Length: 271
Image (cartoon, rainbow, N blue to C red; front, top):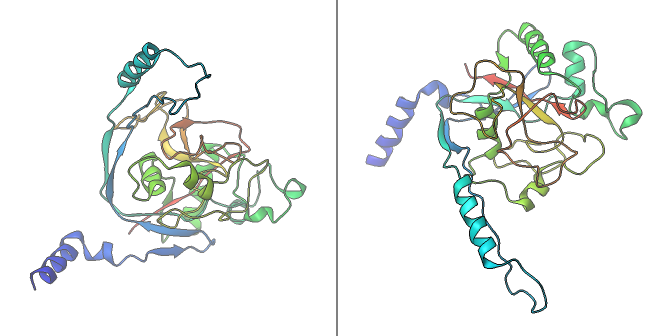
C-alpha cells in the first residue's frame, strides 16, 4: 500500500504532463524523435592511466621503472574530476541525423557532397552534410514556420552528450563503439545501419560530426556554463573518417572541420 502511494506521489510531483508525453514522435517532414527524460551525468572527468606490460618476454627490452613512475605522476597531475550536469527538463532528440531528403523537403536544395554517383545507394537516406552552423539555423527557422505546433532547435552540448551516453557513466568501450558507430569508411552511410544506443538513438557516434548549439570554449573539455560567444560552435560524435579511438561521447571539438562530414540532429522541445 505504501509503495503504491509513493508511486502516485512521484507521478503527481514530477508532473502529469511529463508522464503523458509519447516516447517517440514523427513530425510532418518525417523526422523521428525519441523522448529523453531528465537526469544527471558527470562531464569532463579525465583519468589517464599508464599501462605496464604483463608477462613480458625475457628478451624484450622495456623502459626503466623510473619512467613508469614519472608517467604515473604526470597522469595524476593531468587528471580532472569533472563536474555534475543536471538536465531538469525532458526533451525530444532526433532518432537519426537529419537526412538529405529531409533537408531537401524543407529547404528545396541539397548541399551535400556525398550524393549522386558519389554513393552506391539512396543518397536521400544519407545524413545531410557540407553544412555550416549558420545553415542549420536557416533550416530550423524554416522548419519552425512549416510546423508552428512544435519548436525545433539544435541540442545543447550537454543534451547531446546525455542522450548519447544513454545512462552510461564511463566512456564507451571500443567493441561497443565498433558495433554502434559508422567508422572507417570513404563516404557517409545510410542512417540507422549500425546498432542503436540503449535509448534507441542511431549514429550518435560516426557517420557525420554533429553541430550543437553551444559556442566552443577553446578548451579540451566544456565548461560548466557554456560561453555566450565565440569564434565557432561545438561538434560532437566523430565521423565516418575516424576509427574507434575517435568514437567517444566526450569529444569536445569545434568546426568548421572538413565540411563534407558535418551534419546535425534536432531537438524538439516538450510542450
